Length: 103
Image 1 (tube, rainbow, N blue to C red):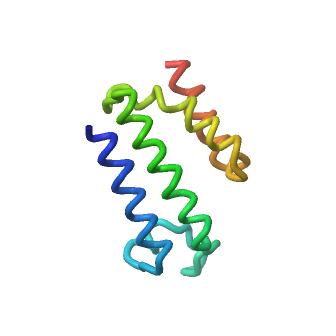
Image 2 (cartoon, rainbow, N blue to C red):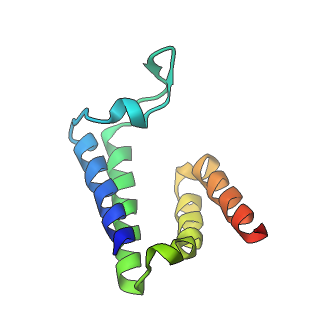
């Protein structure tokens, strides 16, 4: 249940940001000399909220708990590979998956 609440909370936060909210943006975006390196658009932020909501739905339907969060890795790899985010996020997810398999 904690996993589902976490995904839903993050999705709500992204919806807040997509509709112009500013709270927490400085902590979420990387900065260089006090200036954000990039500023994500509303469409991209809504896309992230949609993906996080999908992960929450998958966790709800399949009954994932926090202990089985690693089971979501294949879904994350697939989602990242289907989006333009694969070049950055996909590599991080795959690296995380390989590290967890080697332990």
